Length: 272
Image (cartoon, rainbow, N blue to C red; front, side, top):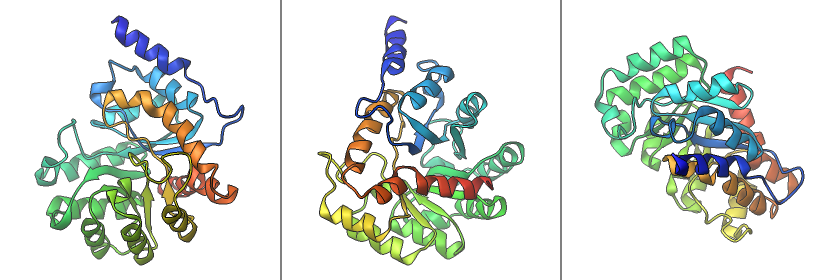
């Protein structure tokens, strides 16, 4: 119990140190899943996001109850995204669970969401019946898809629905050249930078990434990825590091990546 209390207090005590008025950020990749609820109560999770100076956060959880807990406390902060997982550990099995589309439809009738995801799908599995149903649901409800997968999966989703909006989690963990090729091919593809560091490891942006950001200024978003409870400790430090490398970019470009691109996609999905 003492350890859990200390952990929560550490989160609440953290404050950005780089500037009195830190650059606003929208974190496009936050999870608040069932294994985090006891370790970090909802009020403390919201406090951690606010302490990091986040303008908003895209939150998806296993199960969706976690997202709803945070949204109920902070609707101004939380952008709810619907994950097709009832619990952690369903990253592969969900694609063969025929009850998933029905579950998603019921939740989407009940609650407000900007997107469906983050979900894991690779290669030809993007054409499985459950995934096809998810693509149809996104079109029906006018929400984006937060897809963790390879370039082939992204291409297969756009083959099913050329008008889909896709946020590519982790930019596919792909190389800048490959990311750029896919962004050039699909106007409605965005990429988050969650759980990556090579674009600004030492506080500077390498030329290959700078060129990619310059070429697609309206397509990238930042993200932490709190896929385990322990990752919540990193929300604040990640925001500080993000502001450091964003400062190496022209102000207008930095603002777009920091929050404007995510703001645009959230507004589209929420009908704002």
